[in-house]
Image (tube, rainbow, N blue to C red; front, side, top):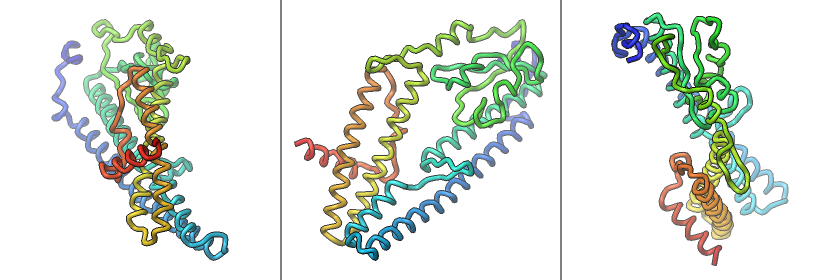
Length: 308
């Protein structure tokens, strides 16, 4: 619609050759990244299993622990480590976090490339970047601004916004997009006053004021902790099913109950935070494979007994 207002006659996206080429490349790139993540995760999970077994064997052979306690320690070690993805930089992430980031970033990068290809086809040099609450500080510097694809003076360049880098525009978890902009025809969507408002400390919680980005980071941290605890509960539940010794089962049940109490405390704090800051409870970010209704009900029961 922007191109048509500028007097141009663009091809539909599904017929534009360059757009289709970018889309196909984006799908292949994202799919390849997911494949690599699952391969490295299988290796790391296997390593965690081997390390846990080695730990148990060494503890028994040294005489420091009986075999029941050693197995319990090994289970704790494997559950806490979990299935992780280790990046070349040394940074580690849980598998669900890594895949979510890969998919969202891959889709975002592909749409950005398609928009750029479309602009080049139409001879459009200027692009307006979107803006939103909760942008990370480095992105807040250029959100809502105009970018020149050719680097024309008087506008931001692609280098200014870090386009093509992990930390910049269309990088890791970036939610910004861009649209064609024609001087004299288009009107900027975001005024400087509006952009300043997006970065104000308007969120208040427990006597402190936060920017939307800071509040968002607090919420994400709470969600990560709940996912970790739910993974551990799922792991203890599976370990109890596999245990062939009453003493070991009782030990693992004690660990499960302790984590159940922790989870219910985390959930209560999360609900309180979202309620007092008028934030959406993102239940999708708390889902964990293996933590289904059965484990959830056991956790609720364990917490009730502990409360009594």
